[in-house]
Length: 102
Image (cartoon, rainbow, N blue to C red; front, side, top):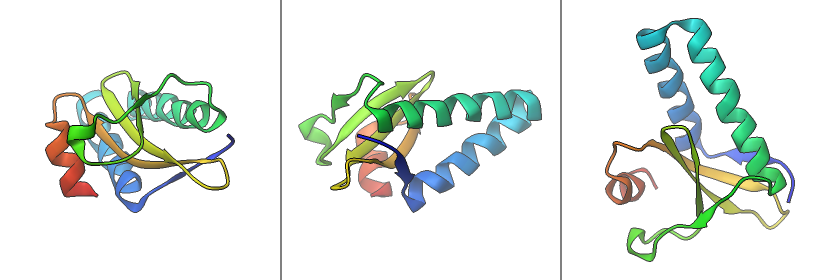
């Protein structure tokens, strides 16, 4: 498995994570957090990051992984790459947000 792509939802969520982080902790910390998040996406794409199946009660097929305080929901594409569906903070109601976002 190599590479990754972000869904439109995940792309918007990255922007929101950056904006929130910048407002709370400043641009340097926000960029550091995003750098780590994108490193995590890369590791997921390579198959080097631990992921689990999304619980059946979420009614969304795929996998999830964690990066610090965020859950990354993704699927494997037919070309072997990872398709990042959504990035949700751990404090959010995961199943409800996934259903709303997807």
